[in-house]
Each structure stands twice: as structure tokens, then as C-alpha cells.
Image 1 (cartoon, rainbow, N blue to C red):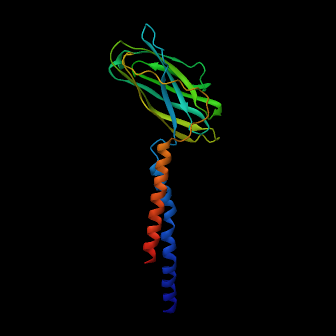
Image 2: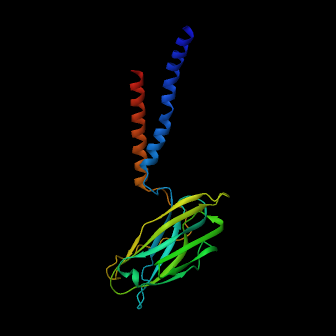
Image 3: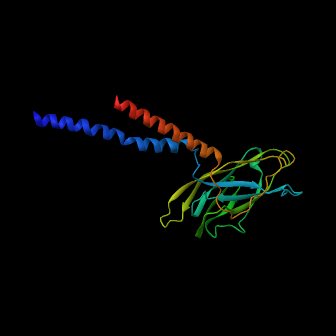
Length: 223
């Protein structure tokens, strides 16, 4: 009987420790959930070169990749074209100056699928914002075209080929006189940008909320 009581007392002593262990995990989950989807992922960017439109209606879009502080050596995905103009764009791809020097699937426009698929690698890896390729689009005078990314992935230069998500904000192209002036072109091969203010604020409030919940939990456990 005494042995049984000791076992029960042992359980009473152990159980609070077991319940305390999930708290650090909970705090970590709260912090991770506070970050927007893709906050830590590599990002593909579409940027129209200011003044690139000629008399033939050609528009030049630079497709660049921002590793977001990671060391990458492979990028892949499909550039898709949707909208009123998606049935008739003339698309040419220029890989001159690309950070990717080894192509498993060199980017080429497939009219029937309205896509540009690509898979390429950089043997030495890269960790700065860099050019992948340029899209030269000949568009009709009216209508809109959305350029986006599907099935994007990047791979770390870690010797194991660890896969990372690759996200992109779609670019909407309208008639040139309707488009807002292009933003100043960012230089390529620049150091990775710091986390923006929204991400830092989200993390700060998540930490405060987690600490508050943790101490509330401890206070309840003492009662």
C-alpha cells in the first residue's frame, strides 16, 4: 500500500513537469504563425524595365530571384500568362547575364500552354538578388496580361539539395499609357534585404502574446 502511494506521489510530481514542456514549443509555434506565408522563402520578382516599350509594343520584364539570406544553387518553376492578352502575346526569352549557368530545362515559351518552364543551376551557389532571365513581350494595344509563377522551387547549396519554397507576386501589364511609372530599377547581385517592418512587428507581438500566455499558465498551475 505504501509503495502504491509513493507511485501516486511520483506521478503528482512528474505530471507538472510534463505539462510544462509543451510551453516552449507553443511559444515557437506562435512566433512562426505570426510571420506571413513565404516570409522566409526565396522570392521571384517580375520587374518591367522603365521605357522598355518600343514602337512595336515590346515590353521587357526582368525575372530576378531574391534568396532571402539563403545560399541557393538551383531554381525551377513555370511562368504563366493569363488575361485578355494571354491568347496572343509573342514571348521571347533572353538568358544573357543569368546567374544560372547550367540549364536542365532552358526557359522557352510554349504557346499552347502559355507558359515558360525553367530549371537551372549555379554550381557555385548564390545568396544575393540575381537575374534569372528576361521576357520580351509583344502585346496588343489593348487589354491586360498577368504574369505569374506556378510550381516554383529553389534548392539550397548545402550538398543535400534541400528544397525551399519559391514565391512570386504576379505582375499585371496593361496598355502603356495606363501603367504607372516603373519603379527605379534595383541593382542586381546586391546583398539580401533585411526583413521588413511588418514581419518584425508581427514577431514582436507574437513574443509578447506568448510570454503573457506562459505566465498566465504558470499562475493557474500554482493555484
